[in-house]
Length: 428
Image 1 (cartoon, rainbow, N blue to C red):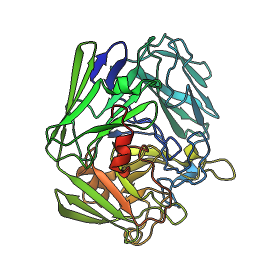
Image 2: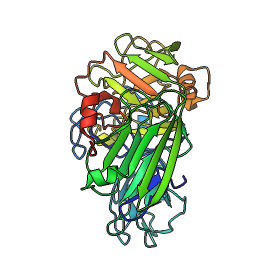
Image 3: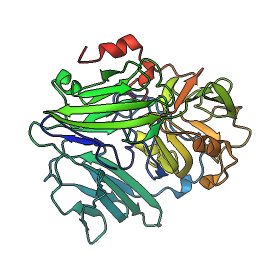
Image 4: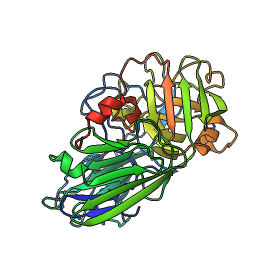
């Protein structure tokens, strides 16, 4: 994806690119993935623990309690070093992939912004891979690995890392992309590669305005993430302009706001009502989180779209007594991410027709009727996928969940009251 802007000295901003980050394992502010539509294989799960580094104490996940294909779960386990989301990786630090109980079949490491591939060496026994060359500073890299176990069963692993910036320089990733069209819920989000101490100085260099005339205010979720939004959703059809200025150098990023689409999932009635530009265009039967694993209540925003995605329970510690994942579904169709911690709205081909609109069976995600492979455009999941865009709002209500959805978990910014949002600005 093209560079959105480079401002030396204090701030260097690039548009997000590459594949999405895996689940953070918590209901906290996470690293923001890029908007995209593609087929991807990686492990995802909604979890609701408060500390991302810990094994979740409550783990709603994207699949129902009974899933197909568990007998085909691979014994191979991939480890990528450094791990997913690592910042400030040294340009000379070792970057590698190892596998236990299997052999690596493919490892690809690329620079996200340019697509340039980093060459590496696979060991003779196929159990490890390491990058051969020195990494570039202030660069975001994606590593994608595949491996097979002794029975030929495959497993995948993915990680996105960011290398250290030069002295007195910060790298930030700006979303959404320059020239894109997004839904009314999409905030402007900047994540920085290292902690920002002088937040006012950095925020003052980033100005966000809308052709609608809406007041736009920035809010710091932590030392690494700054989001901008108006009090209410963006006005449909408006243009948002982000201006970045440093030492007399100015860069501009613009994106369009498309039509308004807000879909409300009612966990009690087990239906989703899709409202576009104030008019209900479809009501869809759904199955949300079970009483044991309820879906978050609150306002969420679609941040990624995948035609198919690999979902694996082991990423959040959901395993059986023998250590195998509680489920492993390689191709969940029509998946759209709602939170960083792994909440998705996605197609479900393994559930009986009687489930949708009748029973909440998932581990936290919202399931819509689909077919294996997602090839039937008449199914509800395919319809919703085709009629949704990055930035559309999905609201969940009447779920049994008592956890407060963190506004920084994905693009859930709209759950924060405006007065609190404004108080999180560093520029007054």
